[in-house]
Amino acid sequence: MVGRQGDFGFMGAGDGLMQWFFDVPWSPDAPPEDKPLEMLRRRFAGWGSPVEQVLASLGDGDAEVFPHTRHKVPCRWGAGRCALLGDAAHGMPPVMALGTNQALEDVATLVDCLGAVPDPTAVVGVYSSRRRRQAALASTVASHSLAVSGPRTLMQSEYLMRMNGATPPRLATRGFGRLLRTLSSRI
Image (cartoon, rainbow, N blue to C red):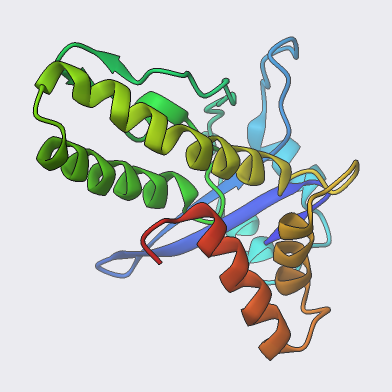
């Protein structure tokens, strides 16, 4: 769920357990949050199910702050025979499963490069140049999907419209497909 206050996500974790997260705008200059649960309850007050149920079920000490920051995606993802992939190369906020998807894209591209580039020390440069643009775009989309204010790209608007149900399902599916094809060379 996406809103001005931040994001909420959840999924089954097996054995009747649920994995969930709240992602809120954060500034490295902000003082540490002493009472994260109170902050979440204030920020997400009035949100519908299941946000209210999750927040109501928590007690003091159940919520912790784990800051993440978006860094510039580097031009080169390793050196010699050491290659970075996934969050080590391009950390992303936890929205739309883009971190996982981009890590899988990294692996597929790295495997392709290992088969196509005869010199192992040249693989990192080829791999980095093939993946950088797409990973940087995915990082930007993930980071800006949280921000409701400010300029948005067409892809971000399509994502938000789909999430908000403001578009007929067939048109929203087509727009979401365009977004995914932009961020993936495998779809």
